[in-house]
Image (tube, helix red, strand yellow):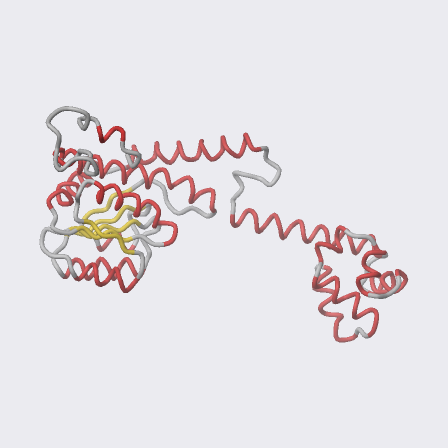
Length: 293
């Protein structure tokens, strides 16, 4: 048993000062693992001798051994939590240079995977439909929302009739407004969103082309849409894995947007400073100056 398990098991039989010591240890195990017997005695309003007797009753040689066991357990918990959330590619002790190089290398790898995995013909078909659609609905939620929103903003800037949704109700309403020739596009790394599945279902019922940008070709969404735009990078098991795939999501979104632009080149002009496409003059290269590019 761990020291905390031993303490919890012993609680019903403890009273007075020993009970106060146990309660302090259970509520602040990390501090006890780093602290002194004097600190613990003050926190529990008792003597060092009482702490020693409790430690012995739990099966330890004394407080130093109990404290060491608490420190080891806390360290294991922290490490397990770190690896589950952040992953093992970056450790708590890595210098900043290594953290940066690891993230950059992972993103480069994800972008390279995307280049090898993207179905160019499928992206072109979706670009064709977006360029001519009466209405385009884009859906993405939580971690998938940033690349979905970026694609929405880029399409919106060039005059594509596009809407972005990230909630169940709004996405269903948006899908119901689609019709023949329109497009419903989902960004979902895992391809397992029930809300996105309902969005796709309604869009298909109304005759729209459905597509998903995803890292999982065999996902439920991948089986339901007309076009699967595979990025080559799945969800992974940690934040580091998920973050590395963001570059593949962004790359595919940028690729799709660039193909749409090729189909509507007359829309690339400075809309804030001109009433229409400029034939010559200062607006010729406005697109290259635009901060949203």
